[in-house]
Image (cartoon, rainbow, N blue to C red; front, side, top):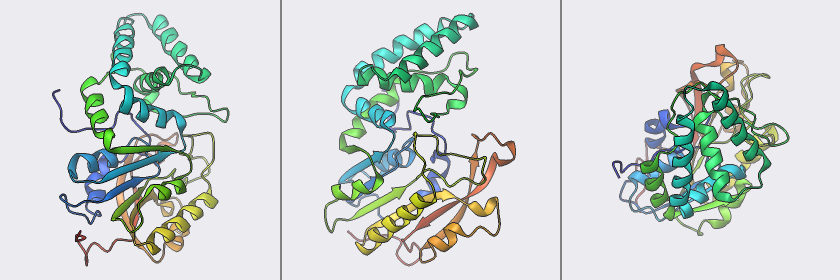
Length: 308
């Protein structure tokens, strides 16, 4: 393999690759420390892979998501990566061979999309379909409707990399240290040893900046304000258990300077505003660099490293 550092195998709206340095600076564990890492909204996994790449003594990682298609892809890469690579490599060859025939290329894409939405293929095929669609659809966007049907149109890429074999193999190797869950974010706590050194990182569906800006279409459910409040209450619980946590969310003050939803909700914690680039938004005015929130119960200035 020509690479050693794992990276996200999917392009995911709101991915944290660009903010890794900022998020990492809020992790109070040293690179040689032993601790548990928990990510209840895994998404594309940029922070997960950064932790797995850099913290070699990590006891264990626990990831979770409500999106079963996404979780199936992680499980497939962990347990059946070679078969997955074979399928993706075949589809990549077939798709690239149609580069000069737009009509057949569209037919190929939409046939795969229809097959994915039927959801009656094997877990390996479903994972391959998700990766294929992610690499070939418009802007690499994952979006489903209320019927849980993927509805993103074909993208304009001529010969996209559909099978990134080297990265998938490295990801599979690292995922051997990861427990993969599917369901509500609160269930992750049940898998954390009592009194352990543990760090939770939360990247939930963001609270929209406006009524038309909705980033909650990763699953056919709605992560509304009540869910945001329930997540904060879960963070309170973790704080009382002496677990460290970091949380990302939108800065709703960007759309309305008088909107203090998160400032009031997390008033007793550390709230930092960081610049991030958003490229997936139907509203052009809300693309580009915008503030995001990075909220944590860790006092980095007074406790730069936790002694373990």
